[in-house]
Length: 113
Length: 114
Image (cartoon, chains in turn cyan, yellow):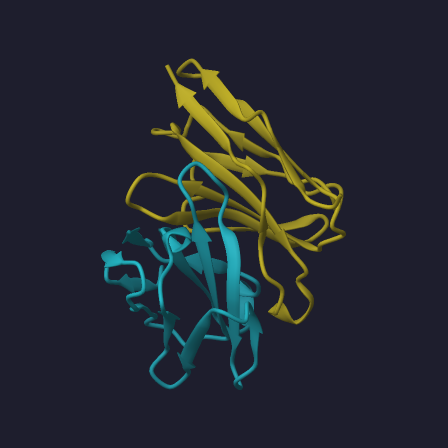
């Protein structure tokens, strides 16, 4: 089952902040965040692991609430280059779905000058 | 340079024909994935493979088939049983050790059924 992202779209002016949320109905092992620009492949932003470990870019921050099965991506002081579609992907722990990485429907972020 | 190569980039097919999309990686990754992307629906998982000679169905596997005979290759066949195959297809790989590796994506293949 796909994770659910909110909001579906965000419009910002340069310098403003945004938060994108991702929630799952299942327990999570890890949460991935990617950004995709139109006509291009998605690019890795961050991984958040159960237990608190994070891996990703210094200028991107995110949180992972394991109990609530939710993650949030924080975009501060937005730049024009932040525009794109943001996807969260989730991996649930163990069993027959080991390694299954499922994505949400995406959040379209548009930054205006 | 290491990376993932998908081919062809654009493909046109007549209804009723099978078509195979190629995905090759030289990153020495164990895990490989196929996703389908349609406008407004995000990335939907078709098949994934954690190791050579083994693969699992994703959420929308009907009408698709895969093989994983070599570590570096994970071709996807879109069969005539797939009712709406026109879409953008993305292949990805990652270091599957401990499930902590990020996905590296290919540039995608855009399939159009005429």
